[in-house]
Length: 357
Image (cartoon, rainbow, N blue to C red):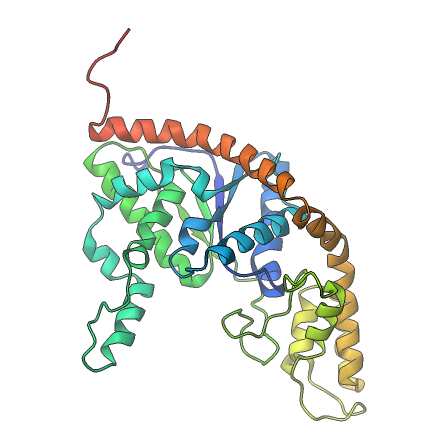
């Protein structure tokens, strides 16, 4: 049965990238590489289009360092382009260049139930932390940015009537909220917004970091993709140094080892072919030195990212080219956003009183 409260639209994939931090190997394997691959395949098949954006408004929720926001925006834009994102084939833009998005967020705020926001995981987690402390207000330190983050995310998605939004498991709730927000507006006013679907790739590996925990910049255990942002440090040497810092056990080189209990092997699996994985697993079971295993991992990763690394530094050294690409994407995005916002404004009664000559 067709849902009469939402419009029918072709497949459209939308991916947002928050502009905090410098991309690391986990970002590449878990997000960048699969997203670009999926977009390229969809475009080649001709069964949809793709929108990629730098979520710099979202970054303001947790980062209050202007230099960090600016530096990260530049590095992340350069990373996605260097990894193969084609700005001619997709719409690649900076969130803050689309002024229609915050306006739509306000409109959606006005019909979104506060109770829905009360159930957001990030907000509830912050409140739970506060309630463990004596004489602390449950909302201490919680900004309206954090509280209403799901509405801005909904505006990002609904502005372009995205049908599929690739997310991690921790973000599925936000897509469900975007569906609720779209459904509420469509029911109250007019069916203008497509209810998006969350796309969770269960096959995409989540890499373990240097210390055995999930790879995350918050743990300080990441492996840099193209370097740590320090121009004085050779990025290839930085990659090798990080790989050789992976924590291993005290087994001697000649001792048989279990590849399924090794961070080095886990990361190797994300880059190697099936045959290469089987060959290294056999080597583990015969006995391998940790230094040799790390050298094999370094060479495998370095072979894949060296061409990308060269393009990355070309872009980092040419911010004008980056800005031109983002502005080209902004023009494409605003063509869609302006039409959608005009329909939305008219639906809620904000429209000209009369036609003027």
